Each structure stands twice: as C-alpha cells, then as structure tokens.
Length: 158
Image 1 (cartoon, rainbow, N blue to C red):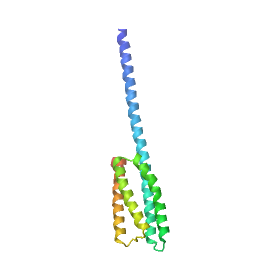
Image 2: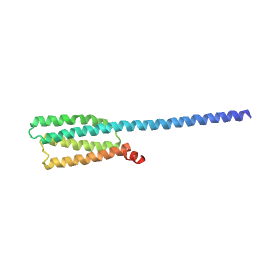
Image 3: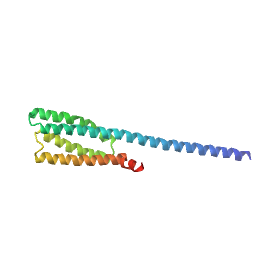
Image 4: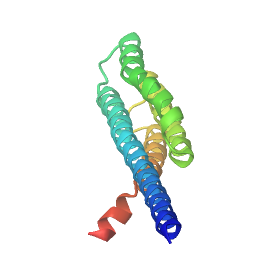
C-alpha cells in the first residue's frame, strides 16, 4: 500500500511541475507578444511622425515661391533624410503587411519631396496628384498599423 501512496505523490508532483511549466510558457509567450506590440506601437508612431514632419516641410516649402532652387532642394532633401532611418527600422520590425504599406507611403512622400525640390507649387496638377497619392498611401499605412496592433479589437473589448 505504501507504493500506491508514493506513486500518487510522484504523479501529483509530475502533474504540478508540468502545469507550472505550461503556465510559465504561456505567460512567457504572452509577455513576448506584448513586448513586440509595444515596440511596434512606438516604431509606428515614430514613423508616422517622421513622415508627417517631412510632409509639413514640403507643404511650407511648396508655398514659399521666393525660395531659391538650391535652397529648396537642400531643405527638401534634409527634411526627408530622417525617413530613411525609420524606413530601415520598419523593414526589420514591422509586420509584412505594414512594411509593404510603409514602402508605398515612403515612395509617395519621396515623390512629393522631388516635386517640392523641383519648385512645383500647390496649384499645379502634378502637386495635387502627388498629394492625393501620398494621402491615400498614408491612409492605407495607418489602417495596416491599426490592424497589426489590434487597435480596433482593443476598442471592441471595452
């Protein structure tokens, strides 16, 4: 009879150890996911901010008809330069869908940079077309980011 008690104790210990290990694994996976979402949330916000700052500079520069061509080009390129750093961070951290959308937005904003650097003014059709293309790409990027971060699911759970 003592061996039944001993066997029961061993089986109970094995079950308790396995349960604790599974619980720890589950907690670790959840923590890893939460950490990744937090990192992505910061990166996505920083990327949108960087694009926005460059876009605001282009808007001001396009309206400044008195800016000389070399200054216009330098200002446009300098304001867009930080977007490259953020682009590379997106390439290694963002989900595939967000990265693809970020590339489109990046290229459309780069087109806006080139138009602004060339002296295109807001009343030109090419400028308006470029602005619309960028705003559409930015909207798709924001939607992809919200979906990746589960922003819409979080608001439904409240």
